[in-house]
Amino acid sequence: MIMSPAGWRYNKRVIILSLIYSAFLIGAVYGFKHHLVSGVLAWIVAILPALPIIGIFAAIGLYLVEEQDEYVRMLMVRQTLWASGFSLSIATVWGFLESFELVSHVEVYWVSVLWFGGLGLGNFANRLTMGRGR
Amino acid sequence: MNNRLKVLRAERNWSQGDLADKLEVSRQSVNAIETGRYDPSLPLAFKIAELFELAIEDIFVSPSKEA
Image (cartoon, rainbow over all chains, first blue to last red; front, side, top):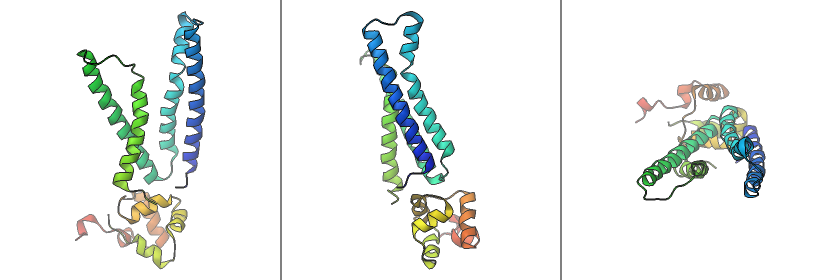
């Protein structure tokens, strides 16, 4: 499939944000491991890795706004719905299991990881139900 | 939704890529519309109709009139 201009912009944004995320995460882990941060700075450094992830959610939203091909846009919307359903379902089940002390605690940011995994699931579902379209 | 897009395209010796270029959509979209897996929006349906100089109902079969 030939990528649309909006698709290129989306990829570029995601790559840049992923690089920023890596830098922020490495910096935060280093900072906390070596006790270099405390007080307000600790809060800021801890939040920094989350910002590029939020940026990726925004990049997906921007892509949906900018994509001119309505069919391709619909495929992405379906992917995001799969991702949301998948991640929130697992988070809900895990939350109840955790509250009844049947499983150990898991950091909430894993919901985002599950959501990105759900995008892949959505892509698979698209191929299964909408065909490859090639 | 059933449609005559593939026939109309073939009559003009256009590939799916040619039609996609003229409609400013992806070839993937043309394929999905031709095979009835995706129903285009009204603006895209009008664009297709105008390209072939036909009415929308001459290209797309109304679901209520399908056998």
